Image (cartoon, rainbow, N blue to C red; front, side, top):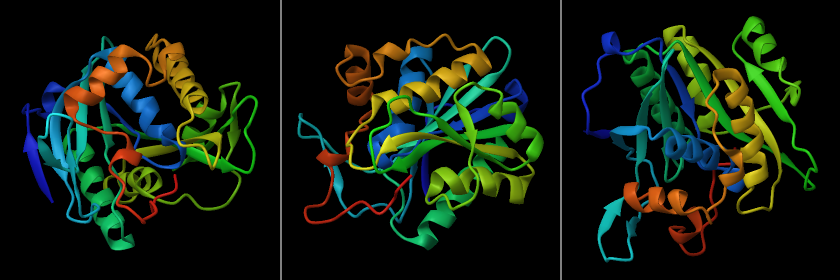
Length: 251
């Protein structure tokens, strides 16, 4: 797995960092939430990651410039603690690729000294929820209780979570002892994008970490969000889908 470093970051220079993950999946719920936070907090890109098991095509911008698919890590230096944000163009296609990628990301968060990994994802439903709830799964009961304190949070009471949004926090715990939590906002499975579900995730993190992010701007009509996509070259997924292929990640 190749990386490109934009800023050398050492763990001793980070203040009790927390990692927040939002990779593309159903309705882009987790990705859109993380992108909104990156934009509002003006987080700085420190690393690009180029997994070998990403879909086998490239992105060509409106200016004709081509690039491979990638993930990116951003750093926000907060007053009380620091935050690392991970998002990307896709998730690896195969189970082996997903496991290797997730372990690699967990290792990077360990190297940065992260004390907690929070993954944002979608909870698929057969209808459009009026007021999306957040289903919470965590690597410890104590951590679970901390996030269930939120009014909109409910227990993820059994089942499976597919994809890197679930694997990264659990690998962080198993291999490196980093606690992890997965926050899954309810959404309708056939939506291409669900800003409302992303909004409830950001609201929870606003309450938890006092980000003061304006959730009303979680849509691609917002100028700064569009500029962010253009600046870091992370495109909307339907623009880079291989014809005739379906995405294989679901959270």
